Structure formats: C-alpha cells, structure tokens
Image (cartoon, rainbow, N blue to C red; front, side, top):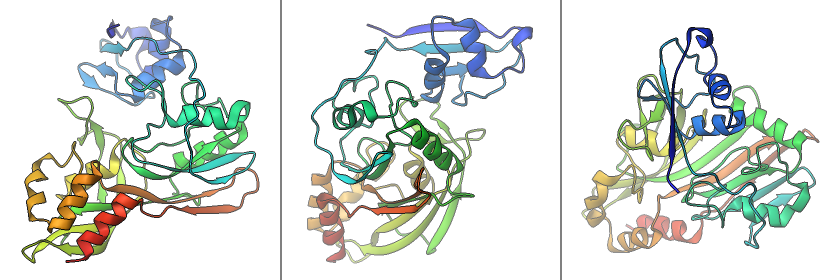
Length: 330
C-alpha cells in the first residue's frame, strides 16, 4: 500500500492557529495524536518546507501537505525478545538497549522492537499515555545506538519522566551522557555546538544543521586521542552531554564540526577512505562493528515517585570495547 498525500490551504479563519490543530480540524479522519506524530516525523510541509513543530503558528494562504503512510496495526503485540534490565520497579524499567534494536514500531519495523519486548515483559502495567505504538516511551535511541534507556510503566511515571526530558536537565537533575568515537582530533579539549537542526532539504531520512531549525545544543569533551598507522592523529573518543534532544543530534553536530562518528553511514560518508589510515586491528574492529560508534553510557533522572536521584551506567558493548582497545594499542 502506498503513501497518501493530503494538501490544504490555510484559511483566514485559521491564521495564527497551531499547525496540529489546523490539521485536526481539516483532516477529521486522522486523530490529533496521529497528526502530531506525523509532524514530528517530518511528514508535513508548509509551503514546501518541512515543519516538525506541532505548535507552529500557520499563516493565511500557506499550503500544508501531509504525507500519510499506510495505516499500521492498531496495537503492537508482545514478543519474547530478551531484555538487559538494569533496574525495575512498579513505576519504571531501565534497560541497556543493544545496537540493532528499534525502539518503537514504525514504517518498515512493525515487529521486533523494544516496545514489542516491553509489552511481553510488562504486560498490562505498561503505560499507554505515549500512544498505543509507543507505550511508556519517553525518549529513544537510534536503532544502531546502544545504551541506557528508561521506560515508564504508569501514567504518573510517564508524566514525570516526560517533563524531565522536556526540561533536558536545565532546571532538574536529568543527565544523558554519550561516548562517541570520531574521526580526527578537535583543536581544543572541550566545546559546545549550538546549532539548530531540521530535516535535510534533499533527503528525508537525514537531519541537518539549518537556519530556522529547532534549537539543538551539545556539549562535548575529548576523553582520548588516537594515532593512525602513520603515527599522525586519526581519531578521538569524545563524551557528549545533551541540552536538547533532537533526532540524530549528536551525529549531526559532530559531523557539523568536522568530526563525524566512525562507522556512521549517514553522516560520515566523506570519511570512508580514512579507514585505510587506521591501524590494521582498528580497521578490522570498525568493519566488524557495522554501525556508528556511539553509546549512551550514562542516564540520571529523578524517580517519579520516591524523588530519589537514580544513576545508571552502561559499559561499552564488546564490539565498541574492541574498537577502543585496538585504537589504544597504537
């Protein structure tokens, strides 16, 4: 079944109204929740420009286009997929997500996701406030990014955690730490990338730094520097802390400053030939990795009921540890 396209023009009556409300009023066959999800996924354009902010205030005369994919199953089912559980109580579950596991069902991934595994594990206790396709999900990691995630099991926990992630630790205790192996060595030990992110203008599956995009801030610090087979600097291990949570944020920002992540087939395409400069063992480890060398190693949040500050860490998975060791051996 192919995608359907809905196009409409904003009337004077709806000028200044939120994008999601206008679409809900004009496309009665789609729920507001569904329309909001489509907006966030980049399936809505305003005057030919992708807008992924549901709160965008439309203007009279603007043409809105919605790309509606075929309907997905009404509700995902439970699947017996092994989970690495770091912590669990009656409010939350913290898992160590492996690379290759999609977080929630979407086009092309209707089964075999973390949500399917959680439904099987948690049963009726899983919060549904995030929508039937994303029950309990308050944040996510890319399919090929490994590391710590927290999932809500009740509506109360979902509300609290959603507020913490929306605040991004600016006034609360939320922390998210990532380790990234990147090409090259930055010219200073630490820094901040403050650059807005939006959908790529020519490739819908990519994000890009774009004027007028959504605010995106990444703080980074060099933890280790590595040399290549010729003895020259070739790569670095960088720790990143997020102040915002945009799609592909770390991958886009590190590529933007000239240090894309090793193994990133989307944002490091111009660096493929550099692999030949790696020491043989590191080159072999990178090839075996088969994904971007990015790992969510730290998650700190306030427990939604007890108020206790919870901290969870995830060690580098074996393939990334092997890459680290082979780079460090030079």
